[in-house]
Image (cartoon, rainbow, N blue to C red; front, side, top):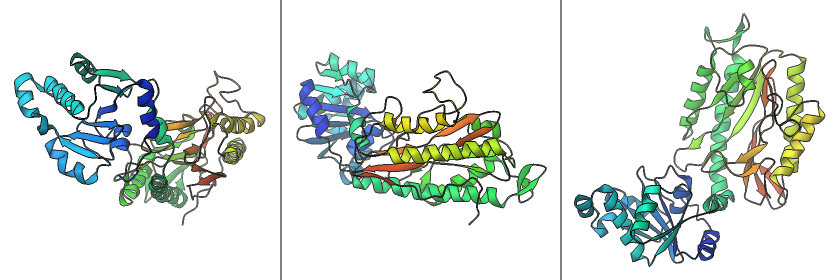
Length: 395
């Protein structure tokens, strides 16, 4: 990875905590680990941040790749501390603890701060060996990750281009389907949520991305914001498609939602779509440096409530209307800081966030429209280049 993160806030926090280093013990599925080390491995490895650099402790299997790929000032094999001999002598757990202890000592570290997700066993083992371990009170690296570098923005933009290709394929299938007895039909078979999701996944793979799941939800299914959808897609009903792929090489996510209806979903559903679109536009207009996530959320709620629909702001117990926050940060995690919600804090240049209002009711269906934007010095740049429209269109 070439993210080249600014870790000065982390080093400042180490000085405040009066510790010598910051230690991460995890595999690369942990986004903080991947971000700080600039390295990916399927098994846990250790990343140590000190005043003089970033230092990795890895297995012999990963050593060569770490030396070539990691954003680290030094990379050390476990074998340098006789790891296998220690494992044979006192077992895997104690062997790991003693190896990390020696690694810390080599870098002059007597006490470390660790993330809140740090393994309890590792922390207890190090303490038993006389190393001070302090669990951070705030997600320091997560806060650093919230402000994206130019390189990171380009990776997210690339993921969003793949997302747009997948959305276009889904829209094409819906637009070109025949209608038989109220059901969408493609090549003589019902066009199901599962078939559309398969087409989305194939398109993403061809663009170097993958995803664990996606949403293609029709009618009442679409009224549950996280219902993945299943079964035949119907004419004259709202269809919510929410795609959130991750680039297989860089690990950066994208996110986009569109709502379509093949045919006439009715006056009320169409009105809800137009109100959601107006709220989405109000949310975009509210994004600028210095604005808070709460203010952006309020701008969206104002539109939806003024149109006569409930939100969690107007009725915290409602299960219809606008029943989630306006958006979230996107990066190495699909949901990260900052938040566009009642608790959302100040937006800063480099924050990448979604704007995704929606209105939901099982009796009508669901509507959601979502773009991905980056906060700039004077406003925002929309990283999404995809039309907004209820009627699906085939290229």
